[in-house]
Image 1 (tube, rainbow, N blue to C red):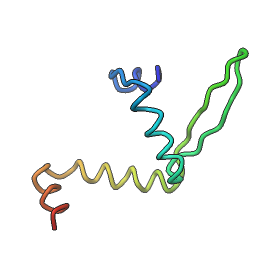
Image 2 (image 1 turned 60 degrees about the vertical axis):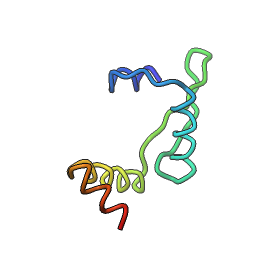
Image 3 (image 1 turned 45 degrees about the horizontal axis):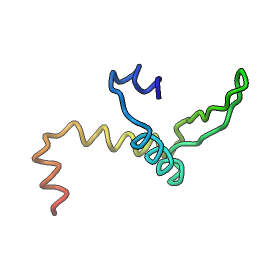
Image 4 (image 1 turned 120 degrees about the horizontal axis):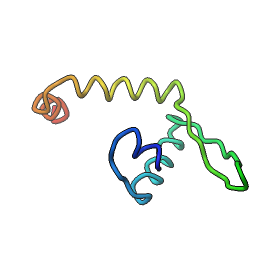
Length: 75
């Protein structure tokens, strides 16, 4: 979680982060791997090809004004 804060400048709680990571992992957008360092276990995630495709779609959504996105979703 400290890495998310470092990258985004936002403090997000575990109640938001971990359920979201679980959903992304279940949908094969990310892959998690447990690693033990200095006696502590931590789960590290990497993005999958499917996740890269989804991320591309999300990035494309933010290229358009919000009004266009909402209108498109309502169609």
